[in-house]
Length: 389
Image (spheres, rainbow, N blue to C red):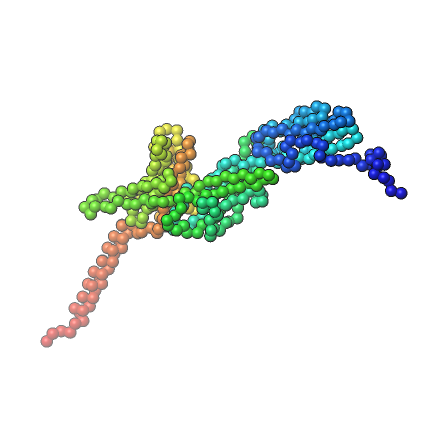
């Protein structure tokens, strides 16, 4: 014989459970909290059959984080850590009725710490660019996504490469945070070029969407050479122009003199400067004439810094290649510490021309050979010519 519903309730085999009488603030089933933020979750239950008992529960609920009084319970999450994420349950009892409400707390980290490379883009060239989001907690592509924008639209013709991620080194922190890097191969930017592209990183959470943007400036003007007077013996003078506050220098194969990229901001902030030198080997020198206590470091070079001979000594740093190598093509960048000011230098690729001494030796050998050959031909002609009657 089937037991009636009233009998089952009387025996306690079924306990009515309904979340409607519970008043929970915030009411959403999933609540996202930024790492380090604080929030309170309030749960109350009106009861006409005496005093209601209400209590927040959870396996990871910290003792002292819950304060309950008859009819109400408050859960406090202070300075949220990633380990605070999880499910909490508010349980309420009114007479013979039991109620519950589940809340999933999601803790995230998504600071506005985007880094883009290179320092600026050059129109008319194929280029690889990267955008890195630092100290993020979610690396799932369903939650964290990258886009390269022209205006408010995604740039067409871009090839996205496989994203990379690695754990950030945190001091005295238990929560693992990551840096995620997205790289793209750009199509050639036609002229006139846009002033900038933008890397956009979006974190999509339940009921919450967060977005950060970082500009990738596009070079609008390039360094040119002042015309040299025919009677002048001085080397050509480099005139540096700036695009979006990024100093750049374009060199040419005819330039054998020392050239430099140097900048001071409008506020007088000291920046490093880059010299290109051609001695027995091709070499770049980054230096900061900013007084004592500063140092410069190379941060970007075509093909990676490991492909060069690098030497750093306080306010000066050198990069060089072997005499048999070609001059690399791309952006070089060095940074000033402390302060973080950076200077960039663009160098077109080229093959080393033969040194003047080698050319002179080759020409001298050729002339000497021609003279010897001419003497031998004359001697044979004089010996073999028929005698005149």
